[in-house]
Length: 185
Image (cartoon, rainbow, N blue to C red; front, side, top):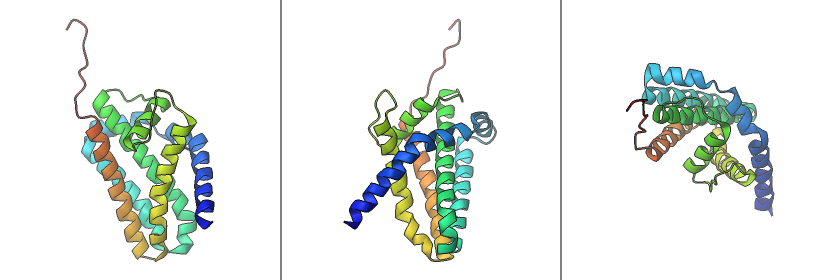
């Protein structure tokens, strides 16, 4: 019975996240700054920077045990999503040569990278599938953050490696370079 309640709660949270949460996070990301960051640092250093930013919120959310976890975990989750979105946009820019990415194209790409069934159009089911996968990532690490200091190390390390693994899998999805034709060629 307890697992059914947890599953129902997760469905509700996934629905909330998929309805407006993803779009709000996406809209707050400055795609031009991502382009500038990739152009200045290169894709690998940009990914490393995002991984460190994700690790920082993981450390903070696990530092004080239960006290900081209550406020820190939701903020950590938003930051983790933001960094994942930034990394994904950076890789898309790096491969496409264009930094302006639409929300539907972006979410279809995220769904594919998380191995959620993604159709041609953005559907509520697909968005909820992405949200459920992301909530699962968060849920598996929450209990570990209850122990002060140890939770900080676990939270920071888990976030860092999550971003690095996501970047690696997204990069593998786009291994072939894109050829941009110039007039007269």
